[in-house]
Amino acid sequence: MIPAAFDYEVAESPAHAVSLLAEHGEDAKLLAGGHSLLPMMKVRLAQPAVLVDIARLTELSGIRLEGDEVVIGATTRHAEVAGSSLLRAEAPILAHAAAQVGDPQIRHRGTIGGSLAHADPAADLPMTLLALGGSVEITGPSGARVVGADDFFVGPFESALQPDELLTAVRVPRGGSVRWGYQKFVRRANDWAIVGVAVFDGRVALASMGGTPLRASATEEALRSGASIEDAAALAADGTSPGYDFHADAEYRAHLARVLTRRALEGKTG
Amino acid sequence: MEIKLTVNGVTRSDEVEPRLLLIHYLRETLDLRAANIGCDTTSCGACTVLLDGESVKSCTVLAVQANGRSVTTAEGLVAADGTMSAVQQAFRENHGLQCGFCTPGMVMASTSLLAENPHPSEQEVREGLEGNFCRCTGYHNIVRSVLAAAEKLSEGSGQTEAEVLGVDEAVAALPDAGVPGAAVGGAGRQSA
Image 1 (spheres, each protein chain N blue to C red):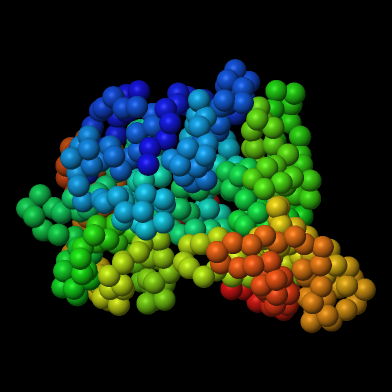
Image 2 (cartoon, one colour; image 1 turned 60 degrees about the horizontal axis):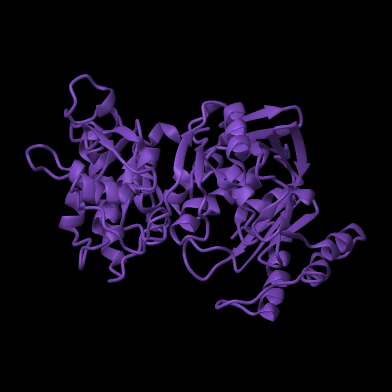
């Protein structure tokens, strides 16, 4: 399978990337690791006229502490997030989630910013950013802005990122001692979650339970009211709208959400 | 556009269409046929090669993304005198293949895995190869092969790890291209 023809531009700086996006409009797409975009281009679900390669912008890569947050550059690859001793100490759920993405080859190429911008409701990192209550830094023609995870994911494969904007960094709270849990139910190696659950500090986020990663609001509320883990987890599917596919129907997904939420609240990973 | 890169220690320069995939560049432009096209959807791992010493699926990398970088295929693991790398030898000795279609990808993924984790447990080998499918389902001998290669590498045969692995990432940086590499790609690239 071969992508439709496109022009290829290498951005020399984040500002250059933004100006190239402005120049080419909605026909342009940013390319980092390409592990969400290129598969879509190969089956012609995406046919951008111009690709703007930002993978070589070193200023967009790296992991550092800033006050009470960890800041991860957008083009930092999953393998680097998963292997980061800083993240393992300060935001271990994010390092763990990155290690669950795809397989080693995919983690050598795919980037945290690319995965979040792709906004796949079944993916590991969108769900995890939501659980962490993190945010993304975005730069566009009218300047920079920060969007919280609760406002970033707006639909299936759709985020608050505009076509002329560049996601530059991801911010997550420092919380090395915060209780967390992570559950990803798959039938095959390197698959997307049939249902996923990420728990961080009383925030419970679900993957594959609707058009975006979702907060399990009823569960969170029950926990705040002092409910037991078991009782709170029983509410995990409330207010969700899971779809159905070859692997699972909606009722099965709801069942999985309740079971996996209980395990995640117990601090289990799997 | 023109790309310049190192493939198996040799500097190449070619005019390519931006949409040309790395696997097609390797197989059709350079006639390197070890890496196979299996699923063509980033799943099966048959097209796995090393990019700057790290395993990647070359069906999901554009040739232009490899511009200025170093690519290693299974052909490049074999020394000039025909000696196979430790991983290749271990696959041979442990019958780590049945039909052989997945083998080049398995060998490249294993080479990258051992560069990052020289002493993997059996479970770590199985997880480290989760991106590579063997539809003959010959996984037991494949895992056995990787563990045997790890053991051989840790014996300390006098060769550097890079020589045993056959990884040539550093070759591009050396003035005398073609000499077996002196550094293992991948190992130092994981820490952030």
